[in-house]
Amino acid sequence: MSQLSFFGADTMPPALADLSGLLAAHGRARLTDDGAVLTVEVDAEWRARAIGQLVTDTGVEADIAVDGELFTVSTSVDPALLPLATQWSSDDGKTVPTGWVPSSRAQRAWFLASGRMEVEGAQYVLGLDATAPDTHAVLAQALMRAGIAPTLIGTHGTGGPGLRISGRRRLTRLVENIGAPPDADAARRIWPHVEPGDHHL
Image (tube, rainbow, N blue to C red; front, side, top):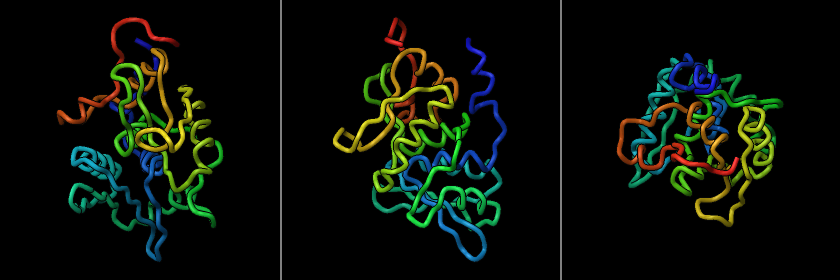
């Protein structure tokens, strides 16, 4: 077992910075007179519930709204979210803070919001915000600083833009970082794991 497992999402204490993973995906930050609010729309109830729990673990209230097959998770308006929202906002829209490195729990939030499986046990993708293309290469560098070198895939592939993670070493690190899947069959089916056997590094 690698030393990184001691710093996985299951063992690290909750922090507001965890919610940066939602913004690395397609989440939105909005500044208000009373603070800031974060929102993210997902396509599965298990994602919404797990994100809601992650939010409340940080001490911020969360609300889930259902519209057909879509679920929108919103934080309460909270002044404690102002620094995070400001760091990820610019005059042109969404921006990535200089030098940002996604923590284990931020990587978990990122996968909860937009993660998908391409090849079971071999390839997984952290989704990116299709409306903020200028963030894509910067987020690839950020994940690299966290010790996982991804492949940037564009909008022409299935599921939209994202960072593809493959290779046994990288996948093992991702699995250790994001922790166990939520308690739902649909989550377990697509949650990253490493198949026995050798994969390319």
